[in-house]
Image 1 (cartoon, rainbow, N blue to C red):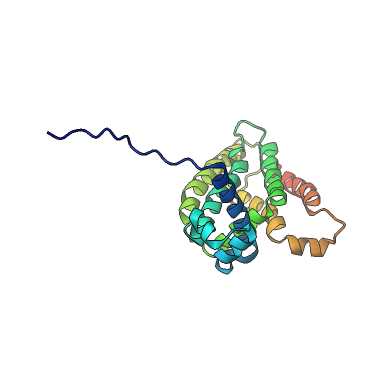
Image 2: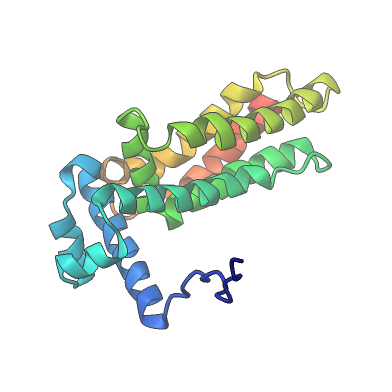
Length: 211
């Protein structure tokens, strides 16, 4: 008769503090390299040098450049969707939409490298994000578009296409991160692009949304 094994299933290994720190260091270095050079231009050697680690040490944590890139994009997608998730169906429509635009503008100020990483991925056809775009992103945008459409149907805001309203907010906020050098070259060093943009976008969207 077979004897049952007394061995318990192995538990996933918990990362040590040093391992956690090294992973974070690698991801921070990769963000810098990818945002400057794009996925194709970046190399594992460049990421390792930026992280201050040897290439074999880097490969202990991530098996490939693509694995690092996918990890960064997965983390970024969650961060990127948070401002839209915060759009409250029970709030004042104009205040909610202006709040969303303001939060997106603040992200362009605070996370310019992440914005450029995302933009580079999209420009290349989103080979590593296609599934997330077609599921998480589309589901959330459709859900919030239905909220905006409902506000318009109630006469609380102008009858605008909600999808294109959201697209316009993306375009008019992420531009300040993705084209920061161009914006600052045109405005000059003494002006604050984000502060000026916040005032401009507030006026623009208030006029657009007025019923």
